[in-house]
Amino acid sequence: MTEQQSHRFERGTDGPKVIVAGMDGSDSSMRAAAYAAGLARRQHARLALVYVQPVIPSGAALGVPIGDTTGEVAQELADEIRESAERLKDTWDVRWEFHTFRGDPYNGLVSAADELTADAVVVGASESAGHRFIGSVAVRLVKAGRWPVTVVP
Image (cartoon, rainbow, N blue to C red; front, top):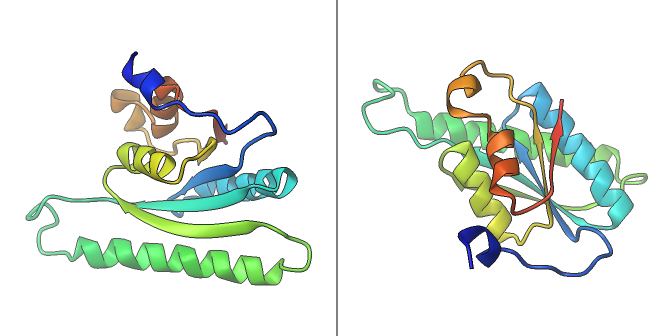
Protein backbone atom coordinates (compact mmCIF):
# COMPACT_ATOMS: atom_id res chain seq x y z
CA MET A 1 0.00 0.00 0.00
CA THR A 2 1.40 3.39 -0.95
CA GLU A 3 1.46 6.40 1.38
CA GLN A 4 -1.24 7.99 -0.75
CA GLN A 5 -3.55 4.97 -0.36
CA SER A 6 -2.93 4.62 3.39
CA HIS A 7 -4.54 8.04 4.01
CA ARG A 8 -7.71 7.39 2.04
CA PHE A 9 -11.03 6.92 3.72
CA GLU A 10 -14.59 7.09 2.54
CA ARG A 11 -17.66 8.11 4.42
CA GLY A 12 -20.15 7.43 1.69
CA THR A 13 -21.16 8.80 -1.63
CA ASP A 14 -23.63 11.49 -0.60
CA GLY A 15 -21.15 14.32 -0.90
CA PRO A 16 -18.68 15.90 1.48
CA LYS A 17 -19.40 15.98 5.21
CA VAL A 18 -16.39 18.19 6.10
CA ILE A 19 -15.01 20.89 3.81
CA VAL A 20 -11.69 22.52 4.70
CA ALA A 21 -11.07 26.00 3.28
CA GLY A 22 -7.61 27.52 3.57
CA MET A 23 -7.52 31.21 4.44
CA ASP A 24 -4.65 33.68 4.69
CA GLY A 25 -6.47 36.98 4.36
CA SER A 26 -5.75 37.41 0.64
CA ASP A 27 -8.59 38.26 -1.74
CA SER A 28 -8.23 34.85 -3.36
CA SER A 29 -8.50 33.02 -0.04
CA MET A 30 -11.55 35.07 0.96
CA ARG A 31 -13.25 34.11 -2.33
CA ALA A 32 -12.31 30.48 -1.63
CA ALA A 33 -13.89 30.70 1.83
CA ALA A 34 -17.07 32.19 0.35
CA TYR A 35 -17.21 29.46 -2.29
CA ALA A 36 -16.62 26.78 0.36
CA ALA A 37 -19.40 28.27 2.51
CA GLY A 38 -21.83 28.02 -0.39
CA LEU A 39 -20.75 24.45 -1.05
CA ALA A 40 -21.11 23.57 2.64
CA ARG A 41 -24.59 25.12 2.72
CA ARG A 42 -25.76 23.19 -0.35
CA GLN A 43 -24.21 19.92 0.85
CA HIS A 44 -25.23 20.35 4.51
CA ALA A 45 -21.57 19.88 5.36
CA ARG A 46 -19.46 21.27 8.19
CA LEU A 47 -17.16 24.08 7.05
CA ALA A 48 -13.71 24.18 8.64
CA LEU A 49 -12.00 27.50 7.89
CA VAL A 50 -8.25 27.11 8.42
CA TYR A 51 -5.52 29.70 8.84
CA VAL A 52 -1.97 28.36 8.85
CA GLN A 53 0.33 30.50 10.98
CA PRO A 54 3.77 30.57 9.40
CA VAL A 55 6.67 29.41 11.53
CA ILE A 56 9.71 31.57 10.99
CA PRO A 57 13.08 30.50 12.42
CA SER A 58 14.30 32.66 15.27
CA GLY A 59 16.49 35.49 14.11
CA ALA A 60 14.96 35.49 10.64
CA ALA A 61 12.50 38.19 11.61
CA LEU A 62 15.24 40.56 12.86
CA GLY A 63 13.51 41.30 16.12
CA VAL A 64 9.98 41.57 14.74
CA PRO A 65 7.53 39.54 16.87
CA ILE A 66 6.22 37.39 13.99
CA GLY A 67 4.22 35.15 16.33
CA ASP A 68 2.28 38.17 17.52
CA THR A 69 1.67 39.34 13.96
CA THR A 70 0.40 35.98 12.71
CA GLY A 71 -1.74 35.65 15.83
CA GLU A 72 -3.26 39.03 15.03
CA VAL A 73 -4.00 37.89 11.47
CA ALA A 74 -5.73 34.78 12.84
CA GLN A 75 -7.79 36.89 15.24
CA GLU A 76 -8.76 39.34 12.49
CA LEU A 77 -9.84 36.48 10.21
CA ALA A 78 -11.89 34.87 12.99
CA ASP A 79 -13.55 38.22 13.78
CA GLU A 80 -14.35 38.84 10.13
CA ILE A 81 -15.87 35.37 9.79
CA ARG A 82 -18.00 35.84 12.93
CA GLU A 83 -19.23 39.24 11.70
CA SER A 84 -20.15 37.77 8.30
CA ALA A 85 -21.89 34.79 9.89
CA GLU A 86 -23.87 37.09 12.20
CA ARG A 87 -24.93 39.30 9.28
CA LEU A 88 -26.04 36.29 7.24
CA LYS A 89 -27.44 34.09 10.02
CA ASP A 90 -31.03 34.30 8.74
CA THR A 91 -30.12 33.18 5.21
CA TRP A 92 -26.86 31.31 5.77
CA ASP A 93 -27.39 28.03 7.57
CA VAL A 94 -23.84 26.71 7.68
CA ARG A 95 -22.13 24.86 10.52
CA TRP A 96 -18.66 26.37 10.59
CA GLU A 97 -15.60 26.45 12.76
CA PHE A 98 -12.30 28.29 12.63
CA HIS A 99 -8.97 26.53 13.18
CA THR A 100 -5.40 27.74 13.34
CA PHE A 101 -2.52 25.42 12.49
CA ARG A 102 1.19 26.22 12.49
CA GLY A 103 3.68 25.52 9.74
CA ASP A 104 4.09 26.20 6.07
CA PRO A 105 0.79 26.56 4.18
CA TYR A 106 0.96 23.20 2.40
CA ASN A 107 1.86 21.06 5.41
CA GLY A 108 -0.50 23.05 7.63
CA LEU A 109 -3.44 22.40 5.30
CA VAL A 110 -2.49 18.71 4.98
CA SER A 111 -2.44 18.43 8.78
CA ALA A 112 -5.76 20.26 9.03
CA ALA A 113 -7.42 18.10 6.39
CA ASP A 114 -6.14 14.92 8.05
CA GLU A 115 -7.02 15.96 11.60
CA LEU A 116 -10.47 17.23 10.62
CA THR A 117 -11.11 14.23 8.32
CA ALA A 118 -11.85 16.48 5.37
CA ASP A 119 -13.75 15.17 2.40
CA ALA A 120 -12.81 18.18 0.27
CA VAL A 121 -10.34 21.07 0.36
CA VAL A 122 -10.93 24.54 -1.11
CA VAL A 123 -8.11 27.05 -1.57
CA GLY A 124 -7.56 30.28 -3.44
CA ALA A 125 -5.27 30.48 -6.43
CA SER A 126 -1.79 31.66 -5.60
CA GLU A 127 -1.19 35.39 -5.85
CA SER A 128 2.57 34.97 -5.42
CA ALA A 129 5.18 34.82 -8.15
CA GLY A 130 7.34 32.61 -5.90
CA HIS A 131 5.10 29.60 -6.48
CA ARG A 132 6.72 29.15 -9.89
CA PHE A 133 9.86 27.87 -8.18
CA ILE A 134 8.48 25.69 -5.39
CA GLY A 135 4.95 25.03 -6.67
CA SER A 136 1.76 26.59 -5.45
CA VAL A 137 -0.03 25.20 -2.41
CA ALA A 138 -3.02 24.37 -4.61
CA VAL A 139 -0.94 22.37 -7.11
CA ARG A 140 0.82 20.50 -4.31
CA LEU A 141 -2.55 19.63 -2.70
CA VAL A 142 -3.90 18.37 -6.01
CA LYS A 143 -0.75 16.29 -6.61
CA ALA A 144 -1.09 14.76 -3.12
CA GLY A 145 -4.26 13.12 -4.46
CA ARG A 146 -5.83 12.65 -1.04
CA TRP A 147 -8.94 14.81 -1.34
CA PRO A 148 -10.88 16.57 -4.07
CA VAL A 149 -9.32 20.04 -4.26
CA THR A 150 -11.11 23.09 -5.62
CA VAL A 151 -8.98 26.08 -6.57
CA VAL A 152 -10.87 29.36 -6.63
CA PRO A 153 -9.42 32.19 -8.74
